Length: 621
Image (cartoon, rainbow, N blue to C red; front, side, top):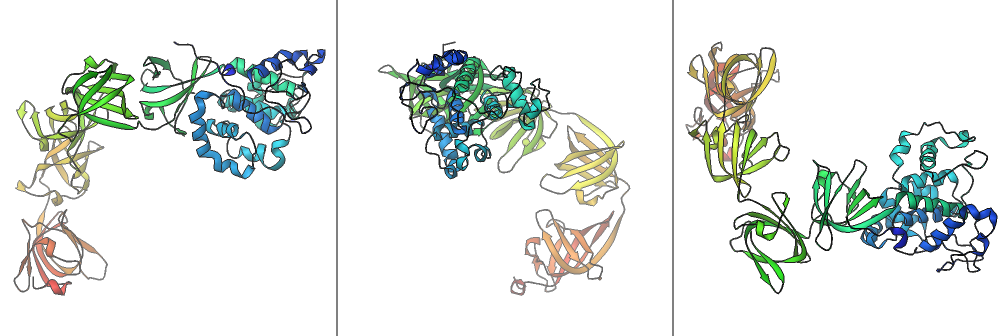
């Protein structure tokens, strides 16, 4: 692991601490302040000297430090922002994002200095927008920061707020513990446990006492030494949620892995993300505290451009590497120049350009016109041990699977229009692939080109609890006291009293025998249904040609609407003039007389006579 520069030696502070009206501070503070030689300030002398040398604090033009002067709220906030890295060179882009997000929030407080620091604290979550009212509204910014308020800021700056919230009811041992505001007890405990804030000589904490310039120097020094905040700018090339590791690629092209933790904060362009949702291949700032990864701040949420296609080869010219890729949907290859520090992965492992062969699926990420990252997978891969959870045909044919391996579980793949299907070792087709089938998928460039499926077939008896009519109809059956839902296949064999029937022949409560293949119903048989003839006269209130039914108000005064199942294949539509029609030419509002059969309460139309048409202009068509 390469040594990282510590922030305490990277940059001088952008503004001086504690401007006195009569004696404004100078930019180059002397280290040996004339008024810090007194014995009464020996407890803070070294810290004042170190923090001045680091550029965090300054003295006055007359060479004094004035250790007893009080520190204002705005000054205190600014100092801890600098300790957290607001003026670090590595955080310049973060600061830009912070201003974009919070300049409008800060505007009402009319800050004449320190906006970088306040924006940075808002970005990092040390301050909330509501905190600005407490610390910066009107003359609040010029009031001295009290010791209990300093404890709150210190805790947040050190990433200890969660712990402070857990200890909000802690019993403190200070003699004046009851004087500490209840809402700050956990923060005082944290700052005390970390030995950043200590009690007075008499055993008290003195919560409302203003923080002095001598005290703030000691606090800053302790936070700096305790946290050792360092920063690294690099590419986030991989987030491995299984091993909880992130991979960084530095400007020299070196990849280094670091563990991340539950408390590691991850953001992209200022928005918080879960590790699994972090975009790989983007520039980011990595913040460490004593070598522990505290945060990842991606300064962009996406690479400049991502191209997926087929790898066609490489070329070297004048010491530069080029890759040839045929982008998906295009017929001709294109050549892209690689950056000097391009990172390469093949099948999720570090790779070189020689790891790729012609025809491999490749994904390249472009930044400033050059390839920054290359990821490849084999042209043909197999997924074994999968179970089909869904076959969808809208808007394109896809298969969704479940799998014991998280890499594949929940994946949905497109199906090639030339897919080869084998089921139970016999040639089959996609309409015979059902939910519950065990499958081995052969993928070419991530698209299914072959499915080898196996299924089991069982027969069960039960009572119908629900039928859902749709482009993927389902039936729920109570079997031995358990309600089970099944998809009804397109070629499901349905018989009632040994005669061919339709799904809408059944009603809730019917006893049926079903044949189940995997998780889909292949056959439904019933022997207890009864069929009789029926006649209906009324006005059509709605029509659904897609699912084959019309609703008719019989006009008996009860408001009851009768659902009638129709089909252009089995139902004849005719006007009183003898004109033949299809279901699509029947209109809402038409008065009709319907003859058909009633099976278990389901009315199936054989003849629909249109007595009068609601659409007069269409009556002669």
